[in-house]
Image (cartoon, rainbow, N blue to C red; front, top):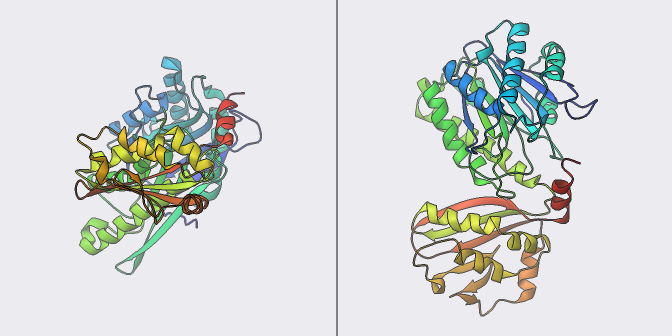
Length: 398
């Protein structure tokens, strides 16, 4: 479902960055007075647009007017020349739209290590500006894709004081997905009015429970960013409305981000399985995460998932090497969906291979671990590894 957001216009153009006749440039315009917050990759090789977007966000105190997104080239690992390209494209938007260059935030996705030429982007910008419309979310969500097979777009509407408040977001990502904020590109907007501090707090909370809970291959990109803007054009100031409105807005934002995050996993490169890893009974959340991610990142586990092979020994091995201090393996229970496959450090007495195969066969399944060490728990969403994943990444540049 796509719903326009008052105060947000999007324009799409074809710059021919990687291939001709393909939408690959998106310009998002935010109404004057809008507030933006963002979270960016922690990868040390942060791409030039990431560095510049974060700097411009700081320089404007979150009052950016435009988000400029290109696909086909990540402009990462390109040194000073890449930074200058990002600056030139921001300046070109500013010249056309009569704003300051620091009010433009650049974002890029695609091949790493190849210099992005500013010229194709600058030449296509007039077309993107002329295309600006509130109703371009669908086309824009398709234009930012790389190895994705389909667009990822979601909307929510809540009623506050008899008025509607809308949230809409889009994301891209299928590979190079590993939480460390934000392992993809995501752009979310609302027509509510929210303070910068409130916006930042709510978005961090939503991202922590969604985009930072997904992993395809354990690789954190150089270009990851997640952005959230509030235009205030609905006339509803969420914080002034009180606790009930804040709670409704928080729930809408978190469910929207979770839908987008899970859509990335469902579209994981070559994925045939959508897998939820649940770990409970931990001393704290950190050790639950350690077990969950060790399972989710294990190539042996992921290839077994692809084969629908209930090779539960690989799961036990992953739990055992997650680094938990003084782990008593005799306390650990392991489930595939509702099937108890291991207990007291060994095969469950009533478990059969046929049960395991039936549990592994569906395209969606849950791996559940009970550590029986405490009251903490966590969830992570991941995929299998297929032949297609290898092919996609082997041929990515060729």
